[in-house]
Image (cartoon, rainbow, N blue to C red; front, side, top):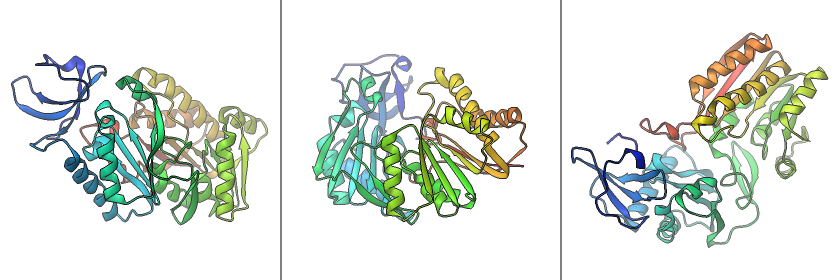
Length: 372
């Protein structure tokens, strides 16, 4: 069935029986039709996350089969060294995230149901990947909505402080234990490669994090300024630049909004400006304010792009839709007094597939604008 896998508590007419939180519950339509089964949690607004739509039995075999199928799909696309191996609802394993970094796995268990089955999930992952180590990165706020604490730690084998991966022919050092999300933003990997086409002359990479866009830009540009508010992130940029032998990357620590305003006052300009900020909102109610934030940063970015240059603008805020983001870019160009061409639009990499019935799984917007 093509329906959304989430059943919200306020959509349920009645509950027959009341098994303990985290147990398997059967969901039926108002007319009694079987819709599927999923783990129930009365403490969460998402009462049930459906992941069994037939007669499958919950347990190790189900997880092993689904994890294998998810991994086989990625391998069929040519993914090998680093990729998202399991993408929750999109792979019929709600609330389970698995990222592969070389010989190591990073895992997020985001619901009570999968948390209670941690041991069998780890066993299934060990059988499928034969990893040297598995690290848990369930240190995310959404766990609190499930009545769970934030947790990190070793689940299997051993995991070093830094794991070296290869992405787009570049070496990247990833910190699985302390890096953003599961250690690195794998959803942008193919967008980072696409940036090489537009990187030339001087490039400004804002919100650079560990330098994924900066490294790819440095392959083509004369000079890259990598800007981030985190000294830890910039140390990682320097580490990755050294790994790849780049001497054309400069790091700048500071608030992107403030620094872009300062660059405008100083009449600095760049051939390419990259904006890849963190999510500006976590709920639909915050979306209007998020759009204002995107408008501000894109207006500043557009003012710094040389004529004939490019603005690369991204958003990972699910609640800011594609239509909202495109309208914001149009308004930013108008306010900046710049005529722009949209030359490329992209989304998350194919190892992050989205469900048409669940727009939460389709979140990443990536635009390349040519400033005329």
